[in-house]
Amino acid sequence: MHSSPLPRLGGVAIFLSFCVCMAVAAFWEIRHPQMHSSQFLRTMIRILGPAGLVFLLGVYDDLRGVGPYFKFTVQGIAATMLYAGGLRIINIPVVFGDRVLPWYVGWAFTVIWVLAITNAFNLIDGLDGLAAGSALFSTMVVFVVALLNGPTLGEVMTIALAGAILGFLRFNFNPATIFLGDSGSLFIGFLLSALALFGAQKAPTIVAVAIPIVSFGLPILETVLSVLRRLISGRPVFTADREHIHHKLLQHGLTHRQVVILLYGVSAIFAMLSLFLLWPSGSSLGLVLAVLGIGIWIGVQHLGYLEFGEIARVAQRTLNQPQIFVNNLAIRRATEELKVACDYDQVRRILLAAFGSNDFDGFELRIELLPGELIAYDPSRSSTSFRWHKLGIAKTLDNSSVWTIALNLQSSSNRRRGTLTVLRNYSARDLQLDVNLLTAAFPTALADALDRTLAQSAEIIPLPGQDSALVAAQAG
Image (cartoon, rainbow, N blue to C red; front, side):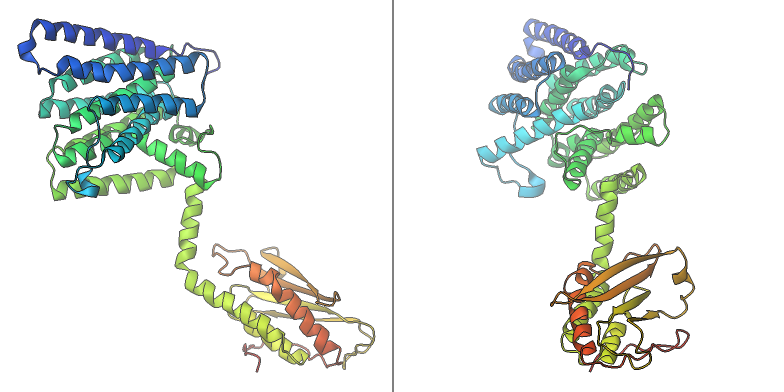
């Protein structure tokens, strides 16, 4: 997005300013221990230790560059340090009820949560000020939750982080003079995931589970979309691309600043919806989920991802599966009947029955005769053909609005018997038929039937006029 190089260690400023605030808070706690809980300093160290490790990982990545697996390993170690320090997921009431999870399950969920949120904020760091601004909204939600539920450390750490981010945004907003870098985005994401775990320990069930997820809505949505897109398209999950949400908005004609401001608005909506859950009830939860679901669906549709359009096409095809069964069975039945057809007229009736009710609009059979095969009406001809189409569309089949499939008819004895050309008008309706059925056994069965019936010098009956109605009948 930039034509000239810019420094990318803005995370160092955020980290140092945050640490200065924490040093002041620690000094204040030592001077006034009666104003804080006995676990204030101990919990602060349990959070800052692994957060510092993730920050150093980001600095090294900004300077030298490391692979995703190394990043995940270090982040997993930091998440394990949180778990060992008591910041952990011990149960998920929405899924498992009030039952306490085994330690290894709780550890796995804790690591997954930390890795997901840490890398989610790193993933949206693609435009000036985007990751920092989105993190500011999420930080304020975590601060409000901490304010209402009483853990003083959560209030101090979130407001310090919010101040550091806000001061940095002055230099990071478009046009940026410094980048957040992995040192900043990874540190912010990790710290928010840890603070969410800390606040969840003293919050009601639905607040503990739903508010962090909803308040981190934009980075989580970006992560989910990126993973799904790459899995659907068969690309490696860790490959880079230019199809993130902010890239798609730029492709729709928005300017850099417009995209960032729009996504700030999205982050603010996620933050407000999460705060509705501070007073949980069945109606508020249902309303939040409904608004989120509808909004995400509409937004993803407008972004125009090809991968999700393909999913919609497959879903529509699933709904049309009954008609596909009917059309497929017609081709399968015709293939079996051609194997026992005894004259040309019967072959013709089988073709009319197979194509008369399916999604094709017509066909043309061109037969190649071998030496010695006779046709009653014109013994001098070396080939013959007939054409069928659905009523009322004869003219459209003669112009360029038609696509065709030409099937070469090669018998089992390796004799060429002509070509069957299937025609269909271009239209918005999908083809409700498995084309593989037409290209597999069907051409050979038709060629064998022609080989067998023409070898008996059977008469070829001309097709009736195209303006008269043709009634498809099964071969008897």
